[in-house]
Image 1 (spheres, rainbow, N blue to C red):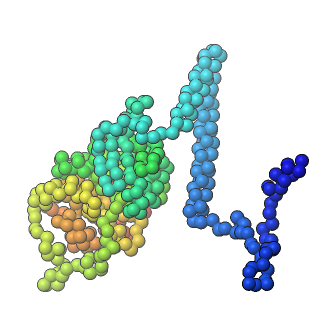
Image 2 (tube, rainbow, N blue to C red):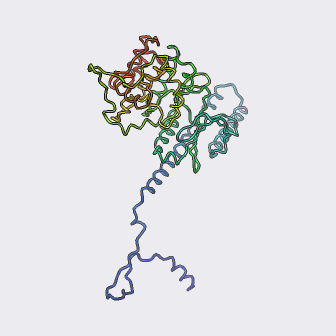
Image 3 (spheres, rainbow, N blue to C red):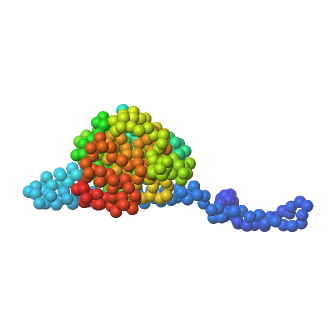
Length: 418
């Protein structure tokens, strides 16, 4: 009994503050020894972030569970209503309901399966960038073909792009539209983040323009109309793309357009630019001049020069600023209007063959964009209709006057897009 009492005594809580029975050598003063409690420690920022992430995960998990439960009930109610209205025997009704329950069970089992890179067979590489690569892949169990975006975590951290990646994932998960690329699932391992997305075999608008040089106005009207709907679908959810360009306009097997690459844009670094870099050069007679070093070329010569450098610019680390709005370059604040400027630049390229402010180097292009009033010109050889020029001019203009600044309906009503 005494041994048991002594064993329990070891687990009794000790006093947090107790006087020391010993005196320090050389002094006659007694000293109190204080034992810090766990409550005295303030949680670190890392701990707070983990707590917030766990809270968010739990909330999302149970929210999805309740949503799935409601959807299952709705599917059963719909089936029961159809069976009640139809002339079906009671035995057949029970069999159909059991079949539905079996399918629901299989679906929930698949939902619980944790996806990983080993579940996919990697096929052809279709894109490579600063953060990773995009490959065509085939799911081993179903044989379905997807596009796998594989992003290197260390590179995203080094470049400070974590929030951009989160924005892309959230947008793809939140926005349900036939005008943007679909996200099926996402997962990660120690080195990489994986996004399994819809595979679009039609290629991208950049490849189409390189193959055809220019589009007819009817073709351009079709693609511009679908791009308007795609931009509208993300603006409705308060997202700005900021990097709309032909490379990010993908085509499905039927030729319909999908918008892709959300949140991973890397605009040209203009942090070293000063106001004088964007100043308009004055000629000897006081008139405005373009870049004095820029060679004068015909439309055909400019088109050939653009085609020669187009793919190299698309996959360079700097990228091309040809579609970036002037307010973005000047870093004076911008909103959703910047996406409509990009649409105007793409439409110009579709009809003329190269972007409206193309120059031999990115810095000269930036200068032209900021001084767009001087440099926006329509070559006579392109033979654009007055309607096409009007739409482009209303997209490539001041923010306050830009078409679409009050919503996509401005464009849809004016030009018959529905």
